[in-house]
Length: 140
Image (cartoon, rainbow, N blue to C red; front, side, top):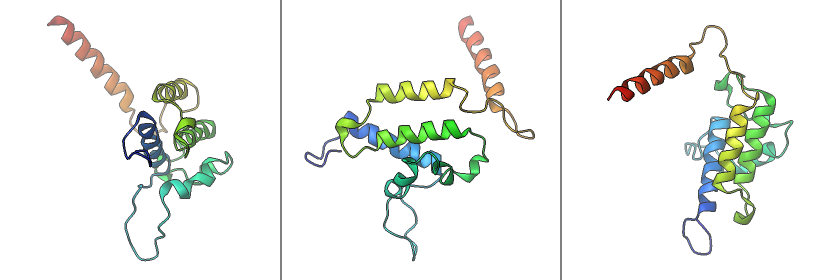
C-alpha cells in the first residue's frame, strides 16, 4: 500500500513478499505476542541490520532449519528480502525479477539436495506421486 494513496500496487506486493520471505528465513512472525518486555520494533526493523551484513545473516536464521542450507544460499535469500523491503517502491524489484532470483537460487547449488541422515526425503515421494498422477491424467 502506498502512503500517499492507500492503494495496493505491484510494488507493495513485492514488499509484502519480502516480509513473508523474512518470516521464512528467521522463523519469526511479523506480529509477535504482545507480552510484557517485548518492544514495539517490527520484524523488518529488527532484521534489517542483519540482512545488510552478509556475515551476520546466519545469526537470525531460523534454528528449526537445522543448518540445512548453505551460507551462500542464506545470504542470497537475505539479499533478495532486503531488496524487496526497500523503503522506496521504485527501487524494489518487480515480481518477475523476484521470481527469476528465486528460480536461480533454487537451481544453484546454494541449497542441499538431500536431507541429513535419519530424515525422510519427501521430494522423492512427491515426485513419484506426481509422475503417477500425470500418467493417470493422460489416460483420461
